[in-house]
Image 1: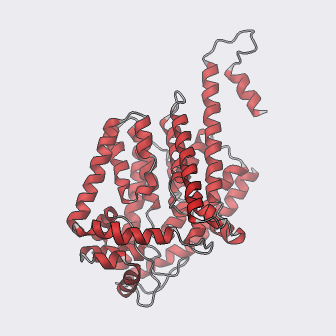
Image 2: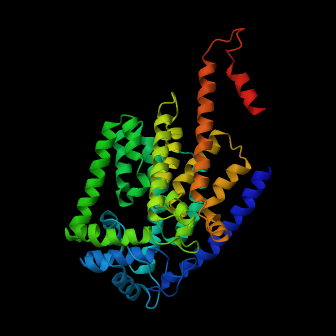
Image 3: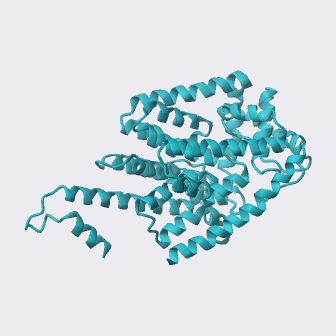
Length: 414
């Protein structure tokens, strides 16, 4: 009960904070343009101001401005709200396909259409994957999702597509692979999805994932022009590296990070040492996924759980708003335990909403350690359940080496 009490207290506070930051924005719909800067980022609709502006520049084929930070922030501020501090754009070209479409709407209307569309996509694919309504609602209102909505990001949709795509691909390869292919818009989200499909021997799913990804790339090229790719691979790559390799600043976006690369940067390690740490973490995460896929008779949700958590340790570039998939698999795990949660579960769940505070207070990025602990916890649970299932199939005898599943479960409980 103490775990539920602590969870309710912090989660309700986060919901209240979301309400007071997000709902007043509905008043903006009476204006065709942005009228004020929004918290917590201090710019109109936070990251959506970057997306909407990028869509306009992509439609105009202004590639240099799109991927040159100094030019982009000036033009974006003029388009959205003069004097505002718009961030730079460094996303790969596939995301420009939906951004170019949404940029035809007035700024504030575009934000709410964008938000509603991403929410609808998330709920729809999760239901198709067979997740219960309580798990879906927990994910949609999780601390990570609330942060994602406030920031105008796309973590709700990408997290749902990853979880749903992994689960569905085990029984409907064409659909599951297609959903995973859509993540080409934010490829760092699904870095272990190909490994998962290979280990599951889902060749058809791989084919449909490639088809979906190529289709989006072609659509983006038709809308934005072939030159967008050269601009991204030169100017865009340079901008990405500049952001990734910048000194760690806990009060900035790095404080919301979730990679081992930024953890070691927060410990004042050089770029080279941090990259080595990231490679080691990624290798271990892949090894854990390979081991998980060898556990017999695991449900697709269980393998997806490990894949989602391990994926977060592979990418050097992810934030708390990208932890919606993490929250969904935590909810799935809690449902598997019949909603019996501990203080550790409470920490895992609330972490996306409190990690920035912890980063500022300690000066150290702790998120990858929390994610690693969640991954280890899931691996231990799944291996224990597999052992119980194995022993349940062994006839009980007087020999001490044969225990019934019931006795093993009882001993673990003690």
